[in-house]
Length: 339
Image (cartoon, rainbow, N blue to C red):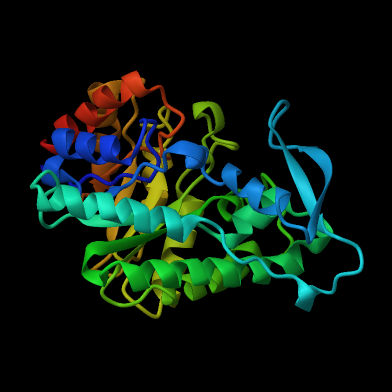
């Protein structure tokens, strides 16, 4: 059975043209959407957003905070003393500038015939919760989140204003919220699933019709290892079903991860309760470099006993992967996708 391929977002290659050319060479039309690879300073997902707060005169750095496991540290920031919530503003985040610049490369390569005609340009954006949880002092997260969200939605508006909707796909990356639902970290709000779904509904509704919309559910990938290993797909299914039930517009795909060690039926069993809309493509992140084609096919075979119709992807982006491994990883995708 032939399967579509999805790219989560990041790729560890030197620049955007190299990413697009590599995807075209190895995957061609097997992937409906090409991301720009989040190259350069964006290679480590949201870590580059630290600079937004470092360089902002309304924020000050207050401590180094241990994250997730020993050795993983990122700074916290807080609003300088004396400022009121309504006085805090963030002008730009850099996502729109990057997307617009990459789309110019995308259109040029499509015009040259390098990128297939039907391929869309994919922009992956983090939820505001992820960024403020990572960088803002806990007691201020609740009132900085709306500030950051407003700025993110302005970035999205710039992106959708500059790129034709029929050429565009927007993916919201949902990580910290999934981890919090499983108890791996604490957010600034309780009722994690319900309150997160409210936020995802709002973010999704901000993507205009005509552009595609998708969600990537994630357990993190520092050092090619999840921050917390999922017991099974139950939490991801709860998020996916909630997104499907609440969305006020079409959702084109939902991606969920599959750890490389999990080729057992118990991991996939909760997928029996999956209730996506007919137009939403399920994407399973079960492609792994470590065990290649054989291991990926083993995970596919187990999943097929429960749900047959799905696309394939890695469990997270591969922006931190050594560049010399990426051609082989893309080859694994292509070989498995071809059946």
